[in-house]
Image (tube, rainbow, N blue to C red; front, top):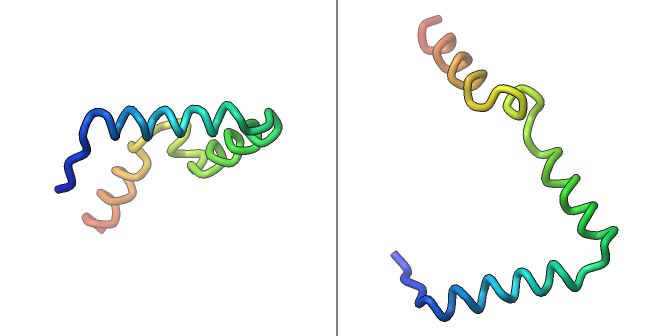
Amino acid sequence: MVRISGNDYIKFITQQVVSYMDSPKEERIKRKTKNRNKAGVSSRWFGVLPLAIRLFMKKSG
């Protein structure tokens, strides 16, 4: 397990926030919509329940 010191973690988070804020607004909007489209419709609406039902049906069937 890799341990990261508190200062290194704060530095990393600060770099991520600054790079996000420096990017153009259009790019930030594209990034948000791109990440939002990754999840399937069923998991976005109902969470893990559809997966659990599918696994249960596969196991019992």
